Amino acid sequence: FFNMSSPAGSVGAADGEEGSNPSAAASSDTSGEDQLVSSFADLRNVSESGFGKALSQAQAWRSNQRAMKEMDIERLGAVMEKLEGNVIGGLFVLVTISDSAKRAAQVDVLLEECEKFFHSVKREDVEVVMKEWYALFRNIATRIVGSPQRCFYFAPVMVKTYIQTAGLASVLTPIHLDCVQVCLVARNYRLALEVCKNPILDAVSEMNGFELIQYFYYAARAFATLKHFEKAIESYFLCLSIPSNVVTKVHICAYQQVLLVSLIHRGEIPTLPKHANAALSMRQKSGESKHFGPYLQLADHFTKNDPLLQKFISTNEKRWVQDNNMGLVKQVEKASFQRKALRVERAFLTYRVSDLAKKLEISELELLHLLDEMVDEGLITASVDQTTQVVEFKGDDSTMHKNYSQQLDSQMKALEFYLDAIKTTESEITQSTGFLKKVARISSKQTTTSSMFAGSTENTMEWSGDQD
Image (tube, rainbow, N blue to C red; front, side, top):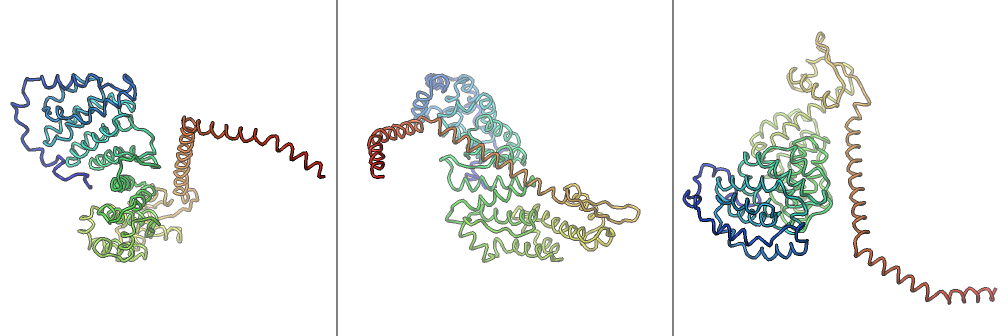
């Protein structure tokens, strides 16, 4: 995965390092803490002081963080306890401390206090300090992506907090990116799905172009792992369509993987979107050997049903492992066997197990496993007579169209989501004070215009009558 900071900012191999000086952590002088807490006395939540006052207080505090930076992280728990109920004050402390936590012991203290803090946070509590709210998630993700164990522990906490503080589900924020990245490092793909399952219609201004590319790539990885291939292809295409003047490593990985996923799911080489990165399109069309050569050759073997496909895969195994795509390549190999089995199923009612295994160039045991998987996935309807060792294929229209029905259901759900989003936007517009004032101005102008021309219209009509 592509970290959003330098490797020195994450905690992984540093777990064995010694912590800070114990004498400093055990200091009993808490006068600095009391001074810090008292300075937050007027910095209250939106519900207590109102949106405008809370915003002005937060802006004043953004320029004065020296006291928090000098605070010992080992005393973080005591400070957060004194700030209990003051969400904005607690957030300022955590985001400043998280920016300086480097060692493993410090990160563990930070995660513990963040977990306690997140339990009571609501959307309205952080609306005036979204900049700091995004920064806290980014700092946490930066500190733990180097440690799968910490990601496994804290990913559910981050996603739960995202859900309880999320705004519009269709608006992309930096928190989406941080949560999905941590879930992928933790290999908790179903949890990542909770974050990226909704279609994205907009993004906050805090998101830059490369973060958009990263998010759609991570989302595609999660969809592909869970075999939601159509959504994976869509996310890969979005990743490749974000405007960019250069070809990054993320672009290269995204194209390699969308090529494999398209072979698995559609059985064809994908056509890049119209607005895909121009430099990437040129490299792909030229068949650049360094990054795309083996993948395009693999696709060529697959689409031509070349019997040398298995040999080509095994010959280039080192390349697939190096690119972290071995799992998808194995699924491409399996998909080639399924395509051959489907051609046999369409042409024959029965087929000997030994002959079919020979035709597919796999063992009889592997063939039986393959047929079981295809039946479970609804690709074919077949049974094996154990006495005669003959496969009997049974045509079934409902089975043949199962995948089509699933795709149709998915598209209907997406359409319902877009309609709801349009209704919500329309409702927000019609209820806004600016819109109502504009309608009132237009109505008053129309009324004035009508009264001005009322008499002249009447005279014109009378004159027309005389002429007749």
